Image 1 (spheres, rainbow, N blue to C red):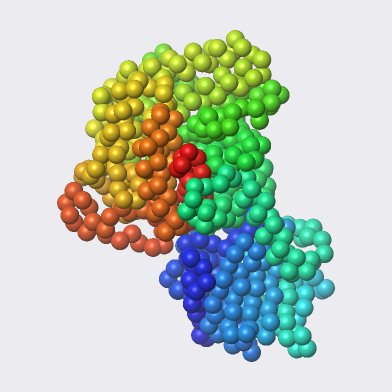
Image 2: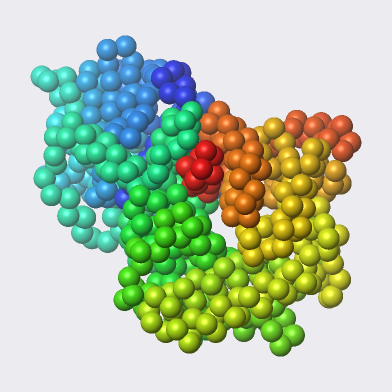
Length: 600
């Protein structure tokens, strides 16, 4: 059987190879296979399996007279449309656990095709639901119900009794002979009941509703600087389409890191996502507070990553204070009521005290000793090359800002004495960071009382303390990160100095690549410290690259290693690391820089 071939990139700036087509509130996505350019695939995010290792993926084939034919596609926030001459197929996703698909003079076939080489092994069985379609069960992946609204549905699912599996699973929507059109729905659910979707609305209304929903979501963001408007639309679309409804372990709407790859709502990223939402402060505040819905009442611990099926064991840094302080600096604190402050400041306080109790360095103060690079945020940064436990100034800096937020919220709640105590703790820890971790050139991580000899960009992240730092430290940080030949590149700040022998642009996060969160954090920190010019240089370099390359988390700044001149090996694609998929980390980092740092 011939495969459909897409002339990708015909209409849009970016094909769907890295960026999926999706919709707010749904777990469905459509993307183009990296290795089989031209093959659109259909999957779901709810089972949290990456596309490189799941049995639940469908090939999408465009049919003319029942035969697969080549097609072009175009996607926007309303729908994705596949065309072959005058024939077309269109898919629109709802936020009610189903999608719609229609076509003219065409049909469409969804074929189950595991990325593990297991074919249709995920299928467990099919049955007719009389007037409401064909229900298909996929074990741990849940159920789908294929419903023909106009036209008919044809299913091929031969079973091998010898192998004990289905050999093939094909679901084909066929046009009505008189109207030459078809219209259908695919519902997804886990139990025995279909999600209450109401009556099927006219398809055009669904497309219009999707566009209106996106426009409403877009209004949450400040306008970006001139020249970045189209990129901002892509960024906001990424966030909108990755925002999922409450389901399973997830109690309230959350923004996923990715849909095809790292299908998690990461703890610190929920606050990161809030930073550019300055036209909807209620939603920004909800994002910052979201992870406290999962806080352990006894210890104060906050989960590191959420998936539909549960929480991951790893922890992530206390980012909430940095995000909130940034928003307060831009718009003030009037959006937080006294009642809301009284509700939340004890939760913020327990989160601080978790770190200063269960990660305490044993010195009799609030200095922590972290056990993993994830607790700092920088998974493979060179400042952790000497191992753990480590006294990390980045973790301490996040704690300072979180302490100050506890103090502010306590003050707004009327607990002045409590507020004063928290401000005093924050001031003391700030002075400790300055006195003990600044070595005259950088903020050094310490292991067993010895400074780590690192060339990581992370060594400058405490600049987010802004004007709490002495001017000579602010000046030195600005001078060093913008010095030619080290961290500054033509596309932003590299995560490791180009003079470091540890630099890699391959399968890594922050040991050489130019990554969104570090560029955003350093630029915002320099701005807070009064270095607007330097902050804007970084922001423009990074945003200019994103505008051309898309919402990728990390970029290789060169095709060779500047220290040795040796060519940098290509990163294998696709791979669930910073250089591959579009992520909300990059999207929100771009939006923060383009709306609040450039031309600020």
